[in-house]
Image (cartoon, rainbow, N blue to C red; front, side, top):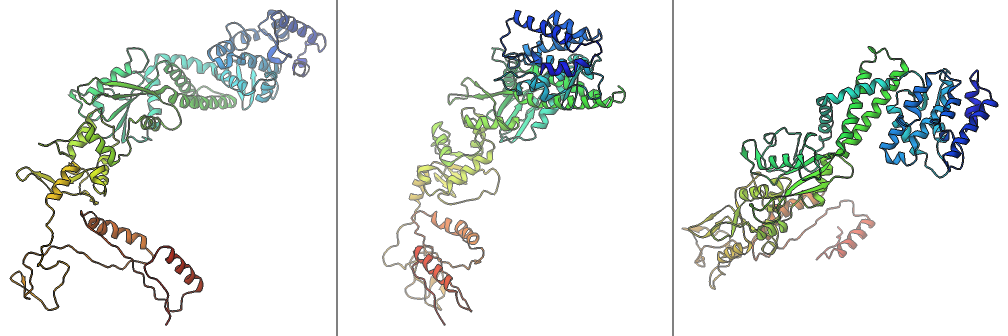
Length: 600
């Protein structure tokens, strides 16, 4: 590859001698490599020590004098850009990748800058860099970084070359440097991108991006993520601006104390990586301004393409750095069941894919710091653990109070919204095992009579309001009331409620006109009913019957509910043999009490 470049590119120079010039150059190259103890298995264009004075003289004696500052700044030398990039990026510095890329591009482009199609394509650059056993993609990364910052390196699609004329990169560097004094523009660009990312809120009900004070964060009972701005970064030092600001937001809302503290989690930037994001943002803004002013700057078509390509690369770099920088999740917790206990701030580092809010909510779920569902048994456990029961006998708690407790106290589970609690209550009430696993529900408590009004257990109910104002009642207390209020058994000699009067019997004065009239008001202790179902929607209709009728009957303590499905099909043209066989066999498998086909 070295000799291809020398005999193909460098020999096109008027003063370069194909034989003598190559021998003089290679003698200087080999001597320099030998003196420096180079142990590479072969000499590639990237091996040419352009920083060596003797080698550099052989490479510049045939070129205009203005190539020397180009080499010192963008190709090779102790203060050159490639050396600085390799020093800042350890994965590149391990191979001296940027320096090798720059040498390769210089060897393949310096003598042909005036050609119609100058430079090398990126595959040729990698060929001139990679030694046996090395991975070529590392040099592709180095080439992209070098092209983004070099003053004299041009790019047109996959082709790269050096020139003695500065590129628009120099203009971009100058503008990026000026933006260091315009921190507001940089912060606004970061804020715009983060807000765009936060349109996906994950499992949070809402997200509060970049509050300027605690008054900007609402005091509500749903779980929310507060994203702190770049002026409040987080560090592992004792004084973290992010944690200080988060404490202020958690403690107050404006001038008033915050009530619902167990609804907030905070996302903050990493202090050590913030500089990288600011630098990438300044570079993007610089390229964006150059593209916007291309007519005023009188850029050539090639320079416009270069500026647009660099703007796209800078845009991707900013988007990639945002999740790397916004990575610290700060979560307030309490270890003791005491509101006065000290608040402990848990810190978790975000990783993975998705938007910032999605990654934050996923981390909270994994750490059991955010619940997106709540089972009745877990609610019962929390009621008993704290305990949360109130009332004169500590036997009930008002649902609105319970919702407030979960939103206020950091030692309780953090719920996505009050709806989770309401759903858990509804699910717990309808459990047939409510006495062991959940609780009962009542409209209110009559202190004078020492009983709960409209006590409901073991059946499904639907609350009319989003937040009911009734009471959750301890299972054992509800069970005692239900037993105490159970009707007595039917006395001998009284009429059975299952008996029906003979046709024509009429009630007279509240009693039947027949001599065997009951001596006490009859209790309704038997229900029967039949309904026709749509044969095309049996599942839907049967489900409605089960929810709206059968579940209410099954919820009565001691009730014995029997459900029979009766099927009658009229088939005027007769049933096909295949249908007869399948239906008969399936009916047997399903344990039908009776089944069969009949003929006319």
